[in-house]
Image (cartoon, rainbow over all chains, first blue to last red; front, side, top):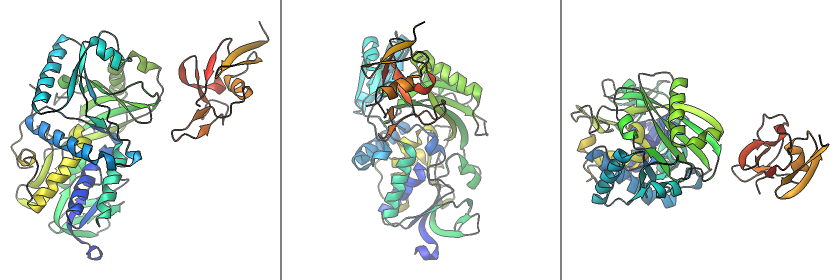
Length: 377
Length: 82
């Protein structure tokens, strides 16, 4: 079957989403080929923080992130050491009483869906994260959120797919998705019954007209300071800044790695097409971080970089067939949640291809849905 | 000005000529593994001129100090990765 270059499923993109789709389809017995210009997970996957988090922007986002987090927890005993699975929890940090009201709202919501979380007051937060500035109002700790090292997680998922017979073509550049399959730059056509566009922010180049835009982000990583940050720390002001669908924004986000390194984010920009560092955004991002953690300025940064999230107007990914073409699937538009939602995406793609019942309804993520600009309420 | 300074390396008292770098004091203390790599391998001064970052130690509770670039001072407390 592979020698004839004919497959059940051909996937463009070997990031974590393409890898998860490949792993699910191959495990279900489908013949699969994945084309990645390389290296594996070298796009937004490697640029991301690797935070696995339940997000409650909309009911559909809760359903997808919670389902996917459950899948990560189930998978965690099998993850190799270099995936650096760290079940450290998420600490939503409230600066003032207004944000504490948001802490209580989130706590009630999470209680309602049986997600473990604890409300911390000002003193408890200072004990839990001693490097935060004094005088913060409190926090919500979502205990079972976690962190992985995304490129190794993508490689692990692809290895699982390969163990079930999937073929990985690294170095191949996809130039066209045709009625027959995937056409590569060297003229090779990989024929397939189902084609999956999992090329993240670049998906519109292969499937013109879809509502995916590049949303640039910056990150910085420090040398090793074990224990400096214990949970993934995010300011609740993030909910105001990150959900603005127009203006450039920054928010305080600090995350531990198993190595003791600290990842510092985050920034969001539309309309920035070049991959270089925008020093004004990096400066704003670090100033915001230092407001929350003054001690950060004494740490040594070893690298900064950027990446492009694949953003959609309603903040939900595109998972499923393109309207009018039941053989062309999209698996993109995951914005800043692609590591979290990759595993659920793989399940939903395989479920739809095979006509299986899915664990959560897939309709909210179908590319043909009516999309409205989502403003955070 | 005194001709020598005394400092502590992993708790042991070391006396060095004034102007000696911390890396020299660590070496005089008989320590060859200044720090550990991310996989736990011992590392020590390689370039001696502040470029390779292999000689990092903790000085007075401040981690990741390049010992080859910092002159010893009286009473300094130096810790290596052990």
